Length: 292
Image 1 (tube, rainbow, N blue to C red):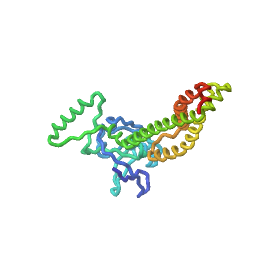
Image 2: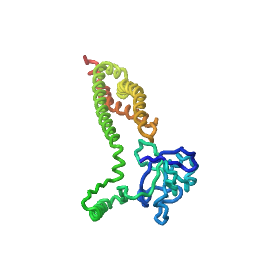
Image 3: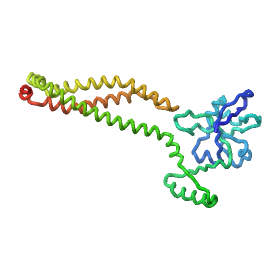
Image 4: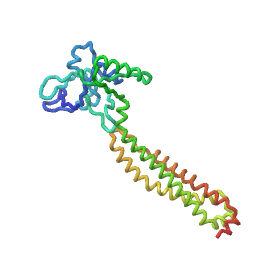
């Protein structure tokens, strides 16, 4: 949940909004977070349970402090009370608490009990026995109350379920489009070969090789494939750019990937047309010249 906080050293009335997360002493270790300055919460430090807080690197930047080391020992005041809401004992390295669609925002962690969630860290081989043990322990202390559990990686990956469905739809339609295009190219190449049967015969009589004639037929089709690719690149670039704008952290559209797609497209066209072209170019000149 969001919380307005007043960093130490700011003018009265000036505040920043922090996402506050109530945790326990073992939160950082359990989730494998990294402390970049200061220390973690400690049960041996009496005030930690009431006044100590951790913040992330984004909160350091939002508060205007020069470094994570400088933030250690600084105070935050809660709205209206004027009392310290917390003293920073450590700074956590930024991590993605939400999906990649959102920028990592400033966060504050404080010791609060009874938040209703318990995190358990276990290796993949120990998941089943750990879940059974947790269920048995829950039943022992909270008999009659239902226990609901989920896996953090599954919950995090669920944020991208819609993008995965979109990817599957695009891949399906892309494959169908390629298959239909290949069938169309094959049919057009066969039709063009029939239309140019006499031309092929004349060229062979005049000394043209099979590879030369096949290359001529393939080139006639490939050049249009190249033209189509050049026309489609700006449209695809615009569509991909608009889609990636939905992510705060995104990969750039690299030129080499686009060029690789063009090379693969040309290879598919050559393979599709090449068989028909070679077959037409390999025909006997006499039969080609008798063709009506």
